Image (cartoon, rainbow, N blue to C red; front, side, top):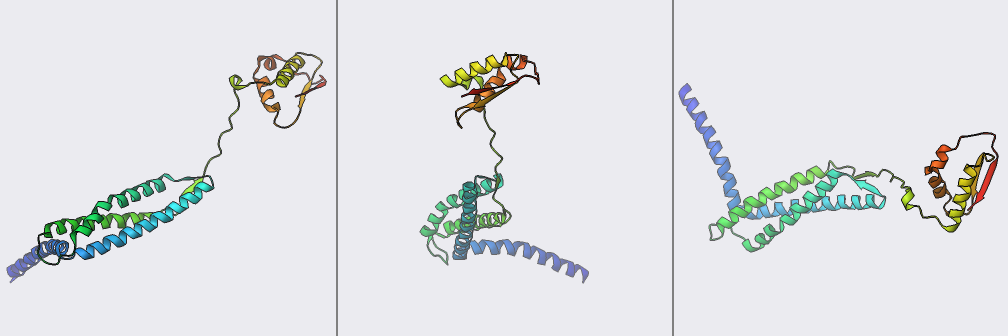
Length: 216
């Protein structure tokens, strides 16, 4: 009895291993329309998820925010999968309906398997999009670039002011130099240029010196 029971268990297990794969194979052959419906549904879900993320990215860019790399990667992958499915969609239209053995059965079988595989890819991508709660972050402030000596091109008034500053720096009777003029005429740039000169570094500081003002 024990031997018979063991034999029945082995036969039952083998039957399951054989029947389940065969069942899937028959589904590819005779349930073509089901695979098409599943493919279309999951593709549309993926398109909707892609549009939602894309709108979030566009809104972030308008706020000068930077999109996360994983969001960019997801959008790229989703777009590639959607575009890559177009030849398959064309084949769906050519295949037509076929519920019994027919000349197109082998093509239908292969297409059903391809649709099932692509639907699973759509599903996984759609689920992964749910983890992307935030699409962007505030961009770090841009560094401020200052003119280098080679880029400094003084005007006539700046040249005159620069000469007066250099002269004042060498004057032992001057303690503080002030620049005055309208906004945007180049006072700050001129001071930076003076700061780069060797004259400034060679002049000792003396608190008792008087002030000297220069227009620009």
